[in-house]
Image 1: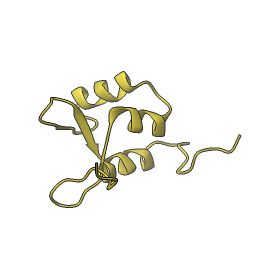
Image 2 (image 1 turned 60 degrees about the horizontal axis):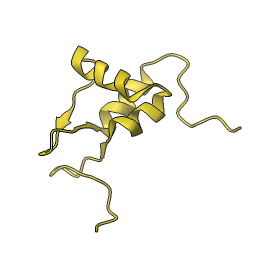
Image 3 (image 1 turned 180 degrees about the horizontal axis):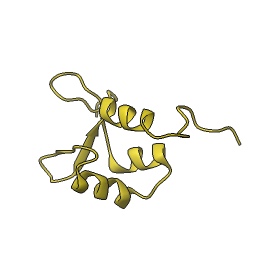
Image 4 (image 1 turned 180 degrees about the vertical axis):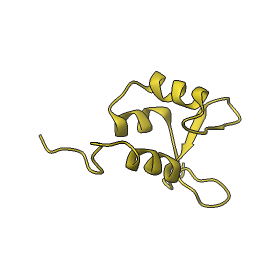
Length: 74
């Protein structure tokens, strides 16, 4: 099993809905709704699962006021 990050042919890192949800502190279903609404584009795997481009997720995070780039320390 490979330990390399999931990538596309352009070496773009892909994130799962759970990974994106953790970044925004929302439920993974919310991320799916964003994709359906066109706020975030998704790529479908051969198994039908959604994956999101890390660069697009980062750009979306930067466009949200009050969103931190690093998680807060407990």
